[in-house]
Amino acid sequence: MNAQISFIEGQFSLIHIPLTLYASLLQPILRILLPHGGPTHNTLDPEGPLSGLTSTNNHHFLNISVTPLECSIVCHASWAQNVFAPLITRLPTHQAKQCHISKDTYIVFSVNSAGMEAGQRVMDLTAPLAMAAIPIFFITTYYTDFILVPSKDRQTVGAALLERGFEFSENESAYVVQAPSLNHAHAHSRIPSAASSESAPPSTPPPSNVAELQVRTFKQLRKRGVVPFVEPGLHLVQCSGKEILRDDSYSGSNGHNHHHHHEDGNEPNFLSTIDPKFYIGLISALVTRPRFISITLAQDDAPSLLLDKSLLWLFGNSIAGDVDGELVPIFLDLGDLPLESTGIVCGVAGKLCEVGRRGSDGAELSYLSTARAGAVILSKGGAGRALEALGPLLETTTVVAGEK
Image (cartoon, rainbow, N blue to C red; front, side):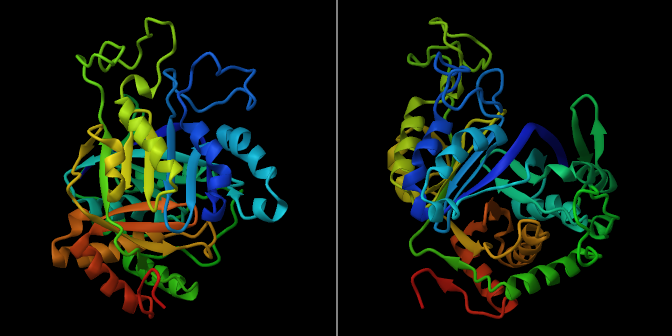
């Protein structure tokens, strides 16, 4: 597996909005997606000057996910405090208490890798961090994997990656590894944690290997009563917004150059290179309070979309990807687990990779972490086998939403 891990500039916040308050907070959700850099984006804006944008007025990183369990947002800390927090405080007290903006900030790093099936990649990239007792959030997109870790654990992350065979490349400003696989014996042993003195020591020592990590993970999930479930009739597609080609008459630009200035003098933004029909479809989908949508904007990628297939019609021909495929999400409600819980992604992905290899579905597995939940995304056949495998591990009966 060849992999490159690059840190994304900025400090990020994690926001939880219950679905019952989604409509009340739709305005800041849409506000964060509006084109930035125009004449109204200045120090006189109601929110004040906002950070977290590139020189071309794109978000360094942004994820908005609406699932059957919650609305979850990962955005730059300045947007959380200046755009979301003021509107949350204006809600009635009992409603405001239901929303949550993480007190601690997170750093985000992108993972570009090749040569390994997706499911194995999830496990191998998260195992080093889980073994170092670092809590993570994992987001698989059409182009890239993204991992969120607490900002205070940045040095620990670097130490864990170096221990696992990564090297820091000054030329790339990234950690890189070139090896057949990270999933070897060395990657399955525990390294001493270099956690910051600001964080409390774990109540128990980190696991000594991935097998022990899996046992601990499912024990913790059983203790908290986590029951995996699927939503009836919910099928997803993973796709991307189409970039505007050089000869598109409505592009108003000279192709894919993200650093140009428009002839009218306005600063560029991601709409400069993405089909406007994609943006209209995205706003339309969010306004309907969809059953499932996850949009990721990242500085080096076109917009990535994981979408309820029934909403495809809103986007017309503005998206690229396998729109004929059908993926099934298995949801894990992790709301009763503390944010600092470790090993959930690696433990669950590792077990499902074993199941996937038996059913030839390992390549289909991807993972979406949200503020208080997780979703494992698999093929239709893989989802059925995964539910059968998870049920005994959690000593409970997996359910379809709506069943009792």
